[in-house]
Image (cartoon, rainbow, N blue to C red; front, side):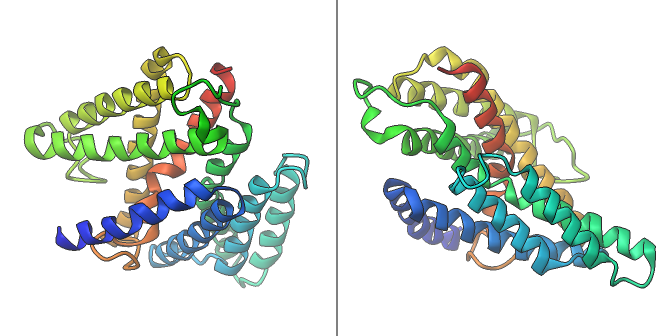
Length: 275
């Protein structure tokens, strides 16, 4: 617990500083996190019995992040990028002598690349979300910083709420085959905490707080599913953590797993429902 606290005390201010600077610095940070997460997920997949092509998969994931950082290059569409990536990975899989191994290599590489590249939606959210009114309490943050900060604090509030409620009141466990420590009480506590934080932040950003009734649970449940998805990969690989990069916290994938699913779903909701 002490190691976790020390690591958090160091990392949280750094992350908030990166967000405050925004722009290319934020894009570089997301690209680095994606690259590190790719290294970890391909190592887990290999341990689980697959034979991915880590270099190709990592390059494809980083390219997806760069496409999100500079949407004008491909007109905001990564379909061409992914099409080319699928072709290149297919060619790489031809090096496997057994076609069954080649197919597994092709699928595992594309899966790993798509999975970690979901972090790119953090940048897409910043570019695509509506502008903020300067009259709003936190309107001075601007769209990129404001909406991404909402995402970050919402996910953190879910993790905190679920942990505290689950630890103190958790009795009813679920999906113990994937993550034995998860409880329904913790899930509910996390959803309530996220909804409250999202409502407050929406107000601060000059938006209607009632959106929190949908956006709060959406982010919370997406964060939980993201955590369970990574746990599935780790279980298949027989690993407790994705790595050892962050003392007390495991690997980078252990820290961003919730954002992998929460970022695209929040982006979808904001674009579809908030003006």
